[in-house]
Length: 352
Image (cartoon, rainbow, N blue to C red):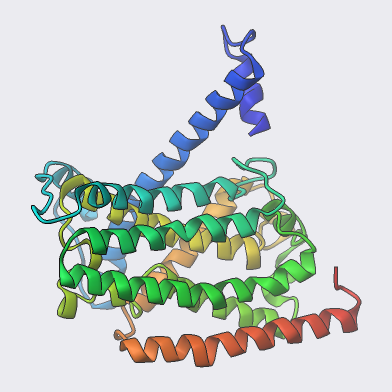
């Protein structure tokens, strides 16, 4: 943010701007940049998911629109959805119905503010950065519940209730999996977490001790459930609930939910990269010539690919299996990882 403020101040005609005006301009610019990144996530990852699904299912995926491997299919879908009629059900709670998709997107957008893309390049360098990300991303749950309730549709309400129960439950192992990292770093600041992993992949937290390796996979599984993606896509089980909590939404309002899903997918992938996989640091020191932001994005995209791989490989689980996995399997294992990693750090003198 400081670098952006300095850049704005150097622009012609901005030398006399007040400090407040500079901060407002920089914050607005960062917000616009993050929203643009979210929109690009939806476009790029839609095409990527179709291609990954096609490859896993021994087919091509989109091939016609744009000619070369159907590269323009996602753009065509975006233009189509923007042209759809905006319909609000007559019996819906109209103010809540209109606000729900905005709240879901806002929860995603606010969380991006504490993501460090490169040294010093972070919108909000907070001491409680990781805690802030988990806190504001919980707004998505409220938005999903609001959408299901306001739609005045029992299928939407079922989907919203499932989504809320699932996301609240899986937030626990998701957060527990990051506690050993916080114990190693001695900080919740996202930049401090990344800086502590410099020097090569052998310094990444995923390989610091056996418990951290298990904690990474706990985080990965919980992140799939947290983003409501297969095999844990209970809120949107089309065979049971038609489309889940957003069944009554059309046009741009539906696009907000769609945009937030892929933004959250990339967000949890970036968090995995910065917490366990070294953030912007290259795996080997001689690769440090690669721009840090590019290294970070590549790691995030690889995590997205693994997420898609899981989605199109495993069948959907039942609701009771989903909750059993969280409360009786993942939470105990995550707690064991916290305890085991703490003992390991004390024994090796690394506890901060």
